[in-house]
Image 1 (tube, rainbow, N blue to C red):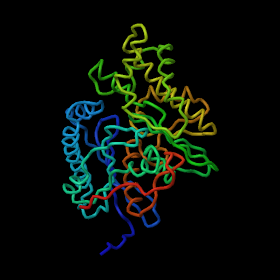
Image 2 (tube, rainbow, N blue to C red):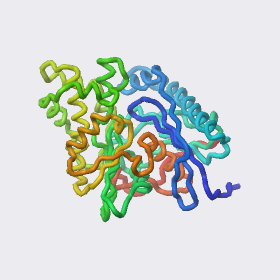
Image 3 (cartoon, one colour):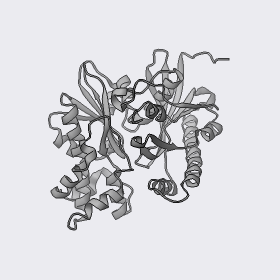
Image 4 (cartoon, one colour):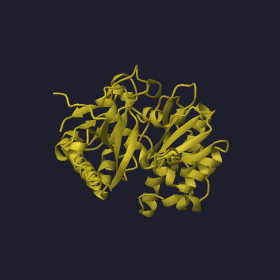
Length: 372
């Protein structure tokens, strides 16, 4: 028997991205008119060994199937832990949640080869949480000829579009991606290039810290203009949308290959130049594809990097740079809220991809159900 529809339904969104810092969880309520409201959020940091296991699976290696399956089980247990943490904080039972939208952890993203792989064992998560799980959001779009990414622009349109202002919603996670919300124009969205990914990798490699807090180490260095130009010569930056990328391209090995073509550069200068790479690639994408933008609203971990935000404002003097908190969603909630909304869209059997964004042949219902 079909469960009667509630006036308000609750969904949990889980997001663990390419920055590999941990799992963001958001409790989202959806009313009968499809209006979302974030009720609470939670975060669970990745243990160091989980982060290392994910990184070790990025390149081609031995025994990948076994390692990926075991890691998927561990991730499911972490996802279940953050769900329990979120429910406990709100004193809610699992039965209060209609479904969990779980992105999973991206291991490979190869739309040119017709596949993308996110692991996390959704069946185990359903078993552990006692809640229906919606996962595997990207495959249906790929099957329709799209990139399967980015998926958040439809959510951005749903919650952030304005009749009064042309906007860009900019997410700076491991990869940076943007959504153009312009009056009278179709929504477009695409990956711009590396966001925090190279900054974090270089910082970890040289300092042992997992990230450069507030961009202070980058700010201590100076621009190496020849290196910046060489990095910007990467063909990905010149590709037209739709396009997507990930750690498959922009990893530490890619950077070290680029550095081998230059004379020795001080580590802090490399960090500063990488910060400028992120700012330049974003600004160039906005100048080229979103020239009528009045304001850029930033979310993701990069929004907390003061040096990066200053560099971005310098590269975009005509636009106002704000965080998405100005639109009612703090920077750490946006992506997890998007996957809660994607779970709601699946339950409504409502298409949630934007073909102009992903390149798919048409709108598609995204996701697969793993019943509790």
